[in-house]
Length: 388
Image (cartoon, rainbow, N blue to C red; front, side, top):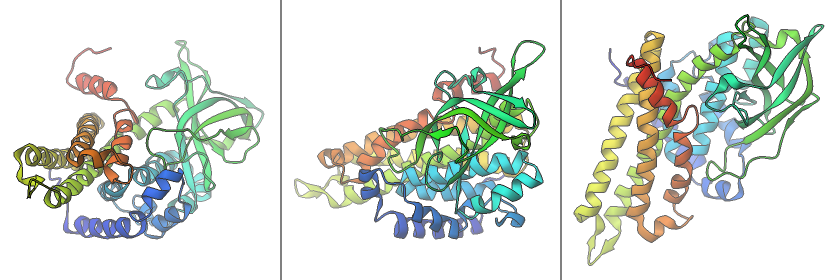
């Protein structure tokens, strides 16, 4: 199986890089300082076709492959992680579940605006008492005639409370199975539905530009046809969605590592001490070389997994590759930002330099879409170990 990027992918990479450097780069420092969610930039990303990369043409997409989405996320993440996660969540967690499991009517209702980047969708899985243990979901949905009545809460939900958020798909208990385990289904909740509240945004360590809220549901009523996919299959659907998301997060992490590498190469060549560039010192040069190794290795793992997705690899093979890519790249990204901050010295501690923002943004990569501990557990299970 080959996972080398095609000439078309590399051409596409250059176009996204040019967009990111021209439309995102000049503004991100101020957006980050102000915790501003740039709706206009999201619309421009939509105009470039980034939200429709994997969607079929009938809904306004380009019908492209998953690898192209990873390329776009990497290049946006190289400039700013918040913008990268906005695309990753908008497509992987917002569009994909509806595209994969929705009825024709649901697709026609929600996808055109989401694919165009005019609206955003969220993915409501995590709860205060159900993070890595998503099966411990306490949010409930009960049928009352021809309506679902939803009560509960979610937390850490991306793209869930912006002015252009149109819908959030949530997991909820819809009954109990014969063995006593919860029946978990997925239900589409339109923004603005009475009782559906996006609480005040979080004051986060990083990802200041990203839109992230806790959500609460109090007797939220939606038609019965807002069930997404088969009843009782919501948990399985979201687990499959997370496999894709882990590769996309790996691409975001690769972008961060590459961004650190680019900044350090430039800085180490320009900054002088004792009359010579600091890059001439082995102590600095070796650290920058380590960044190059991380970028190359992370990119290889990420695009190998993306190619497996595009080429129809088995679920078991893809799940293993996704976890390996996510684990390596997320932990390497945290290390890369520490190295970059050290190379920049005192300047790296100043918010006016991008490495400071990268340092803050990196940590969540080891947590979101499955913690490093969860990835190690999944990898070990994939090796046949009886890990609990």
